[in-house]
Amino acid sequence: MSISQTNRTRTSIRALQVIIIGLTLVVLGRVFYLQIVEYEVYAALGQENSVRQEYVDAARGLIYDRNGRLIVDNEPIYSITITPSLFDKDKLPLLADILNVSDSLLTARVQEAQRYSWYRTSRLITEIDFARFSAIQENLWQLPGIGHQIESKRHYPTDFNGSHLFGYLREASESEYRNTSRLKLGDKVGKSGLEMTYEDTLRGDDGIKYLRVNALGQTLSDFEDSTLVQHPVQGSDIYTTIDTDLQVLAEELMAGKKGALVAMDPKTGGILAMVSSPDYDLKKLAGRLDMDYWQSINADTLTPLYNRAISGRQPPGSTFKPIMGLIGLHLGFIDTTTTVYNSGAYMRGRPYRDTAPIGEYKLESAIANSSNTYFFSLMDQIATDGYLNQWSEMLNDLGLGVSNPIDLPFASNGIVPDSSYMNRTFGENRWGVGDILSMGIGQGLLSLSPLQVAQMTSVIANGGYRVDPHIVRDTRTPDGKIIENAPNLDKIEWVTEENLGVVRSGMRKVVSEGPSRYYTNNSEVPTAGKTGTAQNPHGRDHGWFTSFAPFDDPQIVVSVLIENGGYGSISAAPVAAVLIEKYIEGEISRNYVYNYVLNFVSRPTDSELLENE
Image 1 (cartoon, helix red, strand yellow):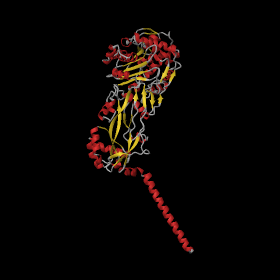
Image 2 (cartoon, rainbow, N blue to C red):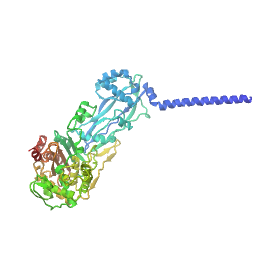
Image 3 (cartoon, one colour):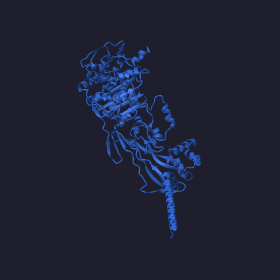
Image 4 (cartoon, helix red, strand yellow):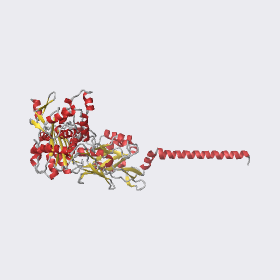
């Protein structure tokens, strides 16, 4: 073979190699494009005639009370799904007719599903009745891309509502489901209460199953392939500190009133019962949203969605005086023998009125008779000697004016002013003692939530320990592992047993000798407490009562706020008394107090009558 022939042969071979390599690269590139870049498109088309992928929702975790009683579970509902790439939009009127919804609503839902993913299955309509579900099943042959899921909604098997405890579920927003791989379009997430705080705990991991379908999209059988199927994992269960019987009674006692109630174990911080009134019907928000009801509770001027127990902020009134006593004793401005004379008013540029009987008061009697003069005098000394910031810091030690650790969203910090706060409110150095005095009796700029009042009362009841209020005691994972919630219990060093003894004694006399004794003094359950009547510039005064029992070994703290209730001794105190009796004794024997609470009608206080003269 000549040299020229050899060169031509080599050139031909190289050209052929280049062509083969080029074709191989084209084929590989096309395979990569089809299998990787356009996987969702062609996977969906390929499965149209053989296999359909469907998500299997994981069951949401259950909720139990402190005794292991089931208080929130799940019940089945039917949902209709759509795969937008397979759906024939000309079938929309037929689908709307079967589902008995408007074309406009269905169009909006289809478009939302398309924005989420053109090729992935997502919910179209949730919680339809069985008749419509059956009709969809019968017409699947002419509704390509339409499927169904059997899901669940929250069910509440007890006699109490618990709307502000549990909270409600609503569909995740676009930003929520795009920010996590755990959510799909139409998934519901907690928007308030425990459902919101423990969303990640209660939510399980969805599974995936595959169905054999025919060309019309009708299901033929399950497609079993252990390498593809993913089984759902149920969410973890949570065990709370709630006492069901106590919660039922608390809601009954607060019905028809505006205010809040918190019952707490002073030794652990566990919430035994919590009510914000008015509340809302949680069952109407459990499944498919009732838009008329949702709009009505949002427009309600009584704000039933607002959790007054933890988010409310009101002057605590005279319930604050025992804490003032502890601070005064520690700072050395008073001792157990310090005597202050009440002439009917405390004079500091102007008279500050006192409703306690005229006479001399020591700390114990000042608490028992709620002498404003005694605590005006104490706050005057604190302010005049430059101890406002230290006063504020000591209240922070009790959990007031700082972030609250309770496992519910939107808890208020309250307002505990210091010099910086006063400067921001009134201007730099443009405030004086007169702007501070009223805080000594729980009025003025000072404001707390009912939960914080219960928290500060627990410090007095438990021997000077700051507890973290909480609702969840422990969590049980699907594999049976128990994860305990271990809240902090911190000793407040400046709170001594000696000082607590004086304060407790005064609070005991409030119940045994004070104006609320007819309702609160129970010989079977020795109780200590403090009434309060907080002035309200926007209407009738608010009634407060905070208490603990039994006196010698406190097992429960109950703090009650009745907004516009007038005197705390006749509005809030009887509510707490009934609840304490039920918890300690197991039954209500003083039915006259129980009936009084159920039929309570507020009446004006002395200050209101004076203002109206």
